[in-house]
Image 1 (cartoon, rainbow, N blue to C red):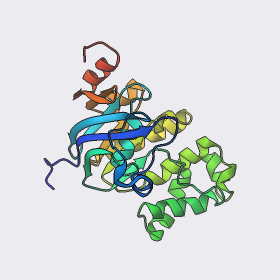
Image 2 (tube, one colour; image 1 turned 180 degrees about the vertical axis):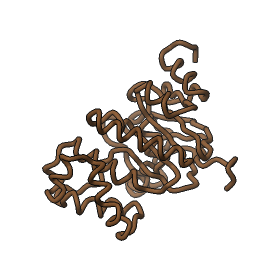
Image 3 (cartoon, rainbow, N blue to C red; image 1 turned 90 degrees about the horizontal axis):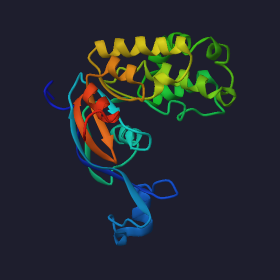
Image 4 (cartoon, rainbow, N blue to C red; image 1 turned 45 degrees about the horizontal axis):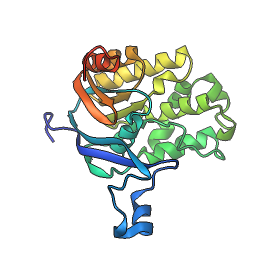
Length: 252
């Protein structure tokens, strides 16, 4: 792949959810409904995203902008491979560091120390690397986490789990960063650490896709914006153009 080739490429991307319950995974649909299920059936389903097409090139910093419930986080999950699209394709040419739902991979019965090793290993970090970076990870997560690092994570607050999750994922050398409102969590000291880490990673040439409602964060880190409205990609331009559309300052 050359620098000019997309590192993320979406074509006609869409995902369908079931009303009143969590989305069925495709494998489950095939097992229970087989080929008789009509993929366009709408009585019990809706499309939070449909017909999205865009390219993101290496080193770009792109903000995903829109109201709550417009599918921004769902889009990140499809890029990360957590959700399978029901229509279209998304191709990702590089490993992904997912800074989203950071506490989801933790086991409540394991200690913070054990979870660092587990989550880091699941994302491809070697035991040698994790041991070498362990003190740095715990220091980043903060004093409260450090005091509880050998206690089961089920006793941690949600903020403590997010801080520890960010500290682990931020150590990954993966070229693509997917960030979902992470910097809105925690106190001023933690946000300062997050900002410093993001700036360092972007300076290294990483590719960023950021979901945030914070205009300051979006303009600080992103040069390009994708504005999603009604499940459709309405504006693909500068981050300011996307923000203006979001605020209703320009027609879409």
